Every structure is written in structure tokens, then in C-alpha cells.
Length: 460
Image (cartoon, rainbow, N blue to C red; front, side, top):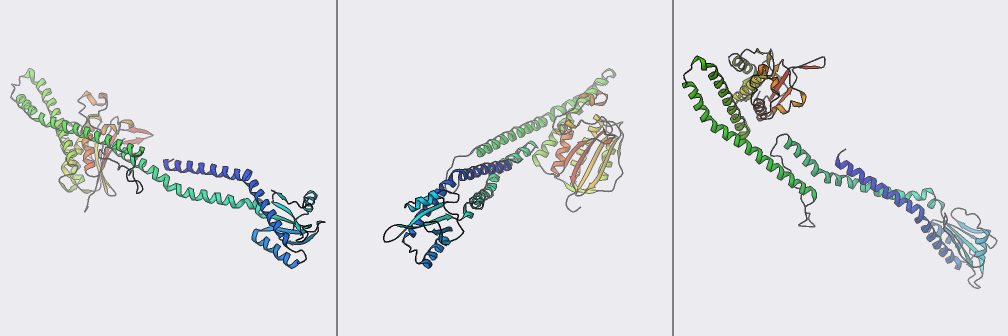
């Protein structure tokens, strides 16, 4: 569950608990207090009728009707024997004998209810003697179960308003963390320029506010990402500079080897030295080519490329190159495909994939190309042992090699830059590279398939 959803649900749970507790307190204590207050008010209203003349029945009924309309009260005036003389509102049961006796003695009686109830004496204006009683009660619908509905509805309405307001607030709290998560994923995926904007600490009512924890975390992440970027770029620049400086001594070594007298007894050692020197030169070429791609970030010579002709050229080179000699390299049948790309970069990337298949796989090595929507997918398949699933991402990183037992014949395992260069070529074209099994039969993976996907490009 997302963080903002958890914050939102926790807030709602707190509000529901508070609302339920408030309703319970009202039902247990507040209702009784309110009823007692209503009883006292009704006693005062009843006493106020003492000035009404019982002989003027029309005036008395009008007064009772007004009292009922203004305060939603049920009112009954009784004689001293308890018989009704006039009434307004709903019927009321006869008063209890003790309450009637108290009213006859001139004392008002109030009861908390439910419903709140009051019984008061009505005195003669002249003598002050008690001549009747007036009984007042709150209408039953106000304090029965429907009467409790109004405060509960108000509480529910308040909770609804708070819930609506809390939702965007929870989103606002979690959004900076979501941006941090996205930036961390991009940084882990190789985007060394990934940064997060620091949330504003102040608002219009406070010009300078202390930074909160999320802002501090954002600054710490940006500082960390900056240091990582500087370290990685510095390492790449150092490697490129060292590789460039090694070109001259390697050229002198090759010249010295060529000038050495080649006695038959020394021929094998000289051939081995030349092979090692060629491996070093290939390593330097790969490092410098990768460094140039890292520096520019864009292909430099874009043109229309015939994918099948490109694969045919790579397969033809494989027939004569010592690194792949003896391995069957073939081009699979397929529809003609054209794309806009840097042909030299693509050729070198595909050659690196073929070399990788020749070193680690088994023949035949099959080259293929196909269009999938707006993308051209190049494939290089071999029939070797394949690459375990946990290592398929790792082998794309620089200088990452699998165990030496995977190299057929125990030959040189390379330096772990071929797939890295191919991945970088795909990325600068806006594509990607993927490693998987060449085939799947009966749930068993066979061989290795490396796919290099490149957008078709504009105008194709």
C-alpha cells in the first residue's frame, strides 16, 4: 500500500475513533445534562403562564399553541383533580400523584426524562392560590432515537469534510518521497544525473522556515548522487586517459616484436606475445570507444542502414577474423528492414556480440533482424550453456565476466567490455539490450540470445 494511502487511512481511523468517542460521551453524559436544562426551561415557561386567566379559554389555547409552535413542546393545563382543561401538541399521560401533589402545594417539578418534563402550578392573579397545573414536555421525536440522529449526522458530516480535506494533504506529504523513490531508481539504473528538487520550506505567512526532514533527506540524496556521479565520471576519465597513454608504448612493443629475429624455437612464444598484445589493443580500443560514447551521448553519423546487409557484413568478417575463425556464423532469413542509425557503431556493437558468443557459446551463431513496431530488433543466438538468470544484468556492466569454465577450450575470457559497449550503443540510439535464453524446450533453457533493440528513426 502506498504511503499516502496509509496516512489517509490512519487519519480516517483516528477521526472515526474520535467521532465515536464524542458520540458516546454525548449519549452517556451530555444528553442527561441537556435534558435537565430543558426541564428547567420548561418549568420557567410553565410558571410564566400563571398570569393567564383560565376563564378566557380562547386566549389560553392560543397561548398554548404558540408555546407548542415556538418550542416544539407538548402542553396540557389541568384542574386540581388532574382533568385536562386545554392542550396543544401531542397528548400527555396523567402526571404522577407525587408530582401533582407538589404542584398543588405550589412547587414546580422538573424531570430530565426522556422526554424532559415539567409540572408547574398556575396561580390566581389576585389571591395567589393554586387553581390549576400546567404540564409541559418536549416532543418525543426530539429525544427519541430519531432525535439522536441530528447530532450523529453532524458528526458524520464533519468526518466527511475532514476526510475530503485529508486526502490531498496525505498526497502532498507523500509526493516528495515518491519523487525521491523515482530518482533513486533512476540513479540505480545508471542515470547519474538523477536529482530531486528540494521542497520549499517557507510559505507566504512565514518567509524563512526551518527545513523539514524530507527536505534534509532530499538534500542528502542530491549530495550523494553528486558524489557518485563525480566518482564514476572521474574513474571513467582516468581509465580513458590511461588507455590513451598506453597506445604509444603498445605501438612500440608491436614494432619491437616485428623487428625481432624469428628463430623457429622462439616462434611459438612470439605468436603468443603478439596475441596478448592484440588483446591489450582491443581492450584499449573498447575503453576509448566507450569513453567517447559516454562523453558525447549521441551517435555522430546517422544514415539509413540496411539491417540485413549489416548482418551479412558482420558474418563475412567472422569467416576471416582469428577471434571467431572456425565458428559457424550465419544470417537467418527475414524481411528486409531499414533504420536510421550510426552504421559504424552498430557494426562494432554487433561484432562484439558475435565475439562474445564465439568465446562463451557454441556454434552455430545465428544473426537475425526483425521489425517490431517502431523498433528494429537485432538478435545474436548461440547454442552454448547460456547465462544464468541472476547474471544476465550483471554481464552488461563493465569488466564483469563469468567463470573461466564457461570459456571453451580454456582460451582468453576477454575483459568484460564487449557487452558494455553494445549496451551503450543501444542507449545512445534510444534503445536497449537484453540477455536471455536462445530457446526454451520442455521448460529447459538452451543457449544464449542477446537482443539489441534500436528505434527505426525518423523518415523510415
